Amino acid sequence: MSEKHQLELEKIYEQAIELLKENNNIAIPSPDLPKKIVEHIDLITDNVEYVLGINNVLITSLTEKIVNPNQDIRLHQAKMDGGYSGRTLDTKYIAPFLKSKGLRSMVESGWLTRSLEQGYPYNLDYRGAIKNKGVKKAFLEIIDFIQTKDGNPRHCLLYYLQNLILFREREKIEIEPLADSSKLSISDICHLLEDHFEQSNSYGKSKLPVIAIYSIYECLIKELKRFENKTLVPLGHHTSADLRSKAIGDVQVNDENEQPFEGVEIKYKKQITHQLVNDAYQKLKIHPVNRYYILSTEDITDEEMPEIQYEVNRIAEEHGCQMIPNGLMNSIKYYLRLIENPDEFIEKYTSNIVVDTELKIEHKEVWKHLLAEIRKSKKTNV
Image (cartoon, rainbow, N blue to C red; front, side, top):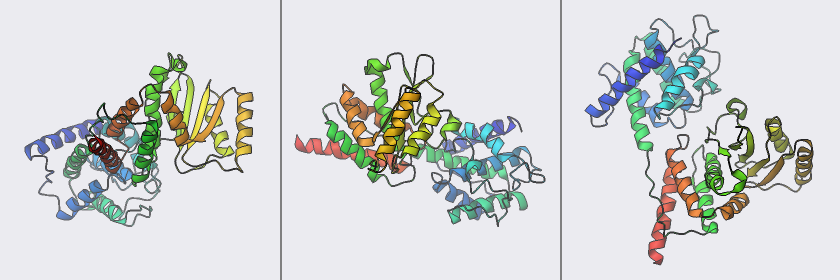
């Protein structure tokens, strides 16, 4: 396994860019690709937001076949007789390449998807429980086309990358910022956020509250003396496990020595329990963390409150960290009161929504619509 994979992928990517320029941003498949295979590639692209595992595995498989034509790409694990380590190749070369180009990708590897990591070859009867049956059929038939029918992996990958590039461009939704005259009250901003969280129906909307809190910290870290000489850690991938990403929470502020100083963990549609508090403590106890917030969209139950308070007191005595479990919106209201200009929060939240690569197009469109409605109502009231 070598950088040949990444270099080959780079060449095909550049060729895809040139083809799109020549054809007025229309993806053109090679004439030797059967219509059915073209349809399969189109189907996977249309669903790519929801099947990132297959996206990475397919690109990895096609790239491996190009670099090593004798490799049976159905044998995607090194422990299989004659197999190769698709996961290692994806983690080391493919996923980093895709992310560097702003193309859709899993955070680490498509093989972290349980339905794709099963120890069976990617035959047409593959037993992995891929939920989208149409996409599963398309993926396995593309692999079968390459491996048993001498299909051209380069032509498949070239067409697929053209589609991914076009998808990337469709994702670049421009959201017009609110005018300076559109002053919103803290209450208005909270209602706006609640509408965004609720009206976004797609998988992945649990990252929206994370982006909201992160955007607030972007404002606070410039204004509060508490955060003098502190650094806000760039927002990571919401799907990364904290143990793998080495983060103590969804939002993190580091001190002058690059040690965790303050953290926030955000739970969407999940209640805070004493066990959740203890789990958070296990992540931070080896660090000099001063405060740690656990915020949820759900209320803490009366039954859990005494045990949560016991854990909070125990952690304060044992470690010194102030654990603060609270409701998400209550905390947002409090934070916004600390910001000198809450409108700046709207600007930062909008900017972070636009550039985030994990959010679905729908999440961005909903926010764009909500801001448009505000502009419309302000004009009406003038």
